[in-house]
Length: 200
Figure 1 (tube, rainbow, N blue to C red):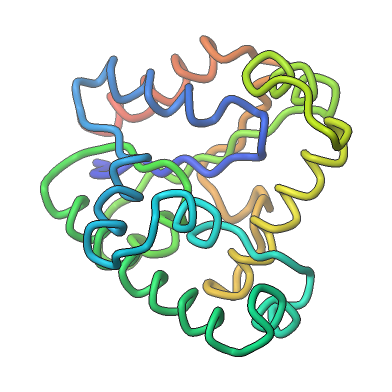
Figure 2: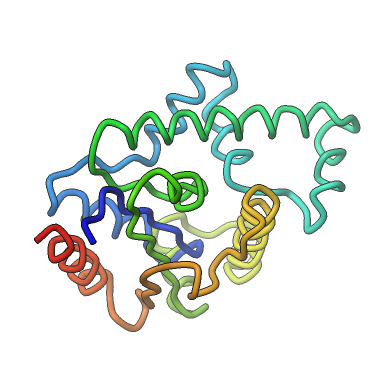
């Protein structure tokens, strides 16, 4: 089967974004990540920071609770749904331009019916991810472990709400790679090789 799009889903701190960019560079195809946020910002008028937070994360375990958390009204839920519609449109538009790598933002679900996607999930153990976020984002008030758990929980809740599919479950992806055990370089090689072989 010849794949058109590579989607990279990832645990926070697993290096999935870096792996996706390197895969795209080696294959000579675009990688869309921040570009998605920028396009949504242009269309919506929301800030990039707001979109980056609301476009992939839910703030609470309960989506209904999240709807009232930010402003005390249901308005924030409407904003989230509006951003979801824009996100779908932007991702579909980018995919229509040709082969590419798309990082996160439920792209695996959004594109699976219309495109042949190689769906990848990148994960790593807690210690490796703690080390990664400290190196890349520095110390924060919250402990690294809490930051990791909170980010992953928000991402999982958001994904479940909009896709009705379990985030991070191996059977929902073609490849699930442990970047902590394999190393980022090996993950890049595996994904690149599978994609290339599928084109032959």
